[in-house]
Image (cartoon, rainbow, N blue to C red; front, side, top):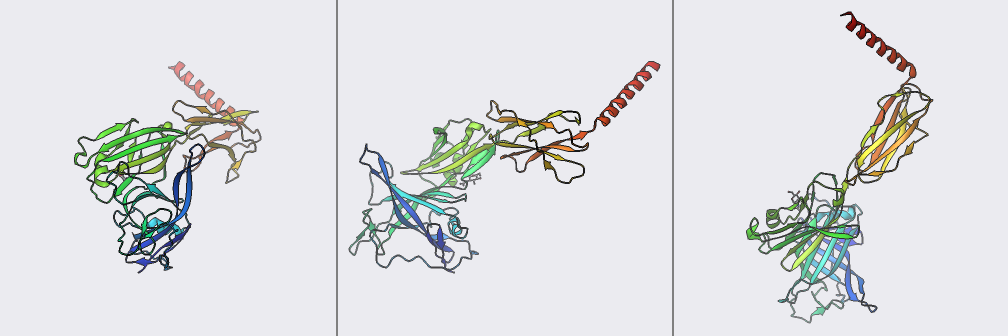
Length: 428
Ligand SMILES: *[C@@H]1O[C@H](CO)[C@@H](O)[C@H](O)[C@H]1NC(C)=O
């Protein structure tokens, strides 16, 4: 079987070879330049192509055989065409890039030049940081690519914009040397619950020989704060690691970091203020890369009615309470179900809402008051239905309308029992 993949924008075609495929992504090269006015940083965005070579494909994969990727026959020195070997380290879930085409999901690919920090012994190699995301899919990866040396037996081709030597077919040969990825893009968790924010990394030598830095930051409403920071060395997974858990109840397993490249953080006893955008940064040696994960805190409302019993009178009020939920948006509806009907119907009067109350823990409460219509027949259920993000399905609470006759009858019965009991007491 032969698979190769070509992707233009959100379009992808494939051809396969022995369980590996090439994925061709259209990317944007973002370059920072100094602007003329006031020295503002300007960004230029140049189209570029990234060919991921040898992406493993499941053996049972049946991809339509389409045009293979072939480098242009005449090298174009203006085109930015990067080729990357991704066999070691492998990109986790890279097959999602293949499937993105069939599902018509867009692949976002952005690259920029990367300078490894503190690299003095800098060889001739150049580096690129590539960030890959697939629309609507929990796939995110940031790759660091290192250029491979080009054998210069013939007159070397030089890329016009980048000034870097190209292969004879006009491609810039690179290999993945470090990557940071996440299996989730956003996660919802309950208040006071625990959550794992997923983040992992891979590099050429695993297990690691170098020191690893893991940092988790939280960005919320324009404010940034450090949540957790750790540096650890492979030889002392338990020993001289340095840990700063700025948020109480945050932890990263140092052993998993060193042995599996798993830098996921666990947050316990979630509060509303834990909500926001989390940034996982992993640094190994000269390289570092990030992933972004959204955390939403949700809490379903506790729903109750003010009355357990509703007797038809000239006007009776019924209040429905939705208590201690998060986030703010909640929908409260009033319905009625008469004994003759099988489906409840909306009441024309939808009651009136009291204003939201916010509790100390950041949750909200809301109540709605209904004036029960006097024309409802006895046996009718009055239903309060509440919908909220944290509920899989709306929650309904109801009360049955009783006729006043039943009420006076019950009063009479109660009175009778009390009287009988009284006489029994007196007779003894
Ligand atoms: C890290 O470990 C946790 C818990 O074992 C697991 O759920 C998660 O998928 C792992 N993540 C990565 C990136 O390996």
